Image 1 (cartoon, rainbow, N blue to C red):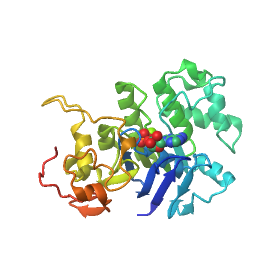
Image 2: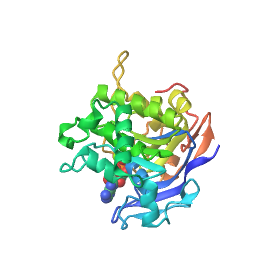
Image 3: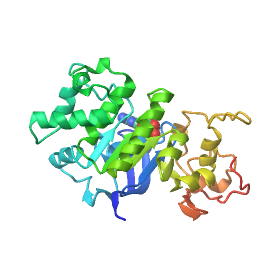
Length: 318
Ligand SMILES: Nc1ncnc2c1ncn2[C@@H]1O[C@H](COP(=O)(O)OP(=O)(O)O)[C@@H](O)[C@H]1O
Ligand SMILES: [Mg+2]
């Protein structure tokens, strides 16, 4: 099967940053596949998405051996071609539903502006159909409302409708439901899943939530401090994690039964080491070698893991 998105050896460094925010990241999104990027806040997930979609400020240093969409070089693509791509094959949704909308213009105007080609009436028709499909009641009337009349969940649905009307082949979704409450989040995820199957979409899903990743992806990359700690089929990575960080992430998920787990300390990613394994400072298995030598990714079990110690002595997840 062909790949929709190919990223090879991506490194991103913000101006004056002490170290790259993304370093040596490689992955592919196969046609109709769903790949997730997971990791704590600050691990470089959004930066990866922004680099791939060319939404970073030009002052940010982006290097890669390859970043391509359906075989076309995204890093060297001109502005015009990029714009056409964003209104075509490549769709994006981001975390904050309010930030994506202009409060002073109606939902309809904003969505119609993004649609090219056909007559206004026909474009409107297509939008109304999508709006109905994403569960907006009485779309003809509601589309004339302003964003503040919509709930966060409805705004995110409307945004999704506005993206899907372009019939993208790849959807990049950066924490699309993180700002929403749990019920709305579940509904929206279910909808994205359905639309994905219906439209044969590929997806790059970004989330800090392993529950979301488990439901929505077939391959997962675990990022820590801008590097891939582990990647593999989602079911394998979650069932038999090889990297101590993946185990710690899994152990930090609140459970209904059993002992309460201590959550990972957030905000320490930025202090990650510049030499050796980035996780060495937090890893309970770390050795001297981990503190000095950066581990290269290796196949262990069913996953690819950047850890000197894999497979770990205790086979069961922490
Ligand atoms: N505009 C920016 N300028 C400088 N550093 C940034 C900027 N945006 C993000 N970073 C840094 O890059 C790292 C990764 O951030 P980000 O990609 O937003 O992580 P995530 O999406 O996983 O939470 C963090 O250390 C963050 O502080
Ligand atoms: Mg982010």
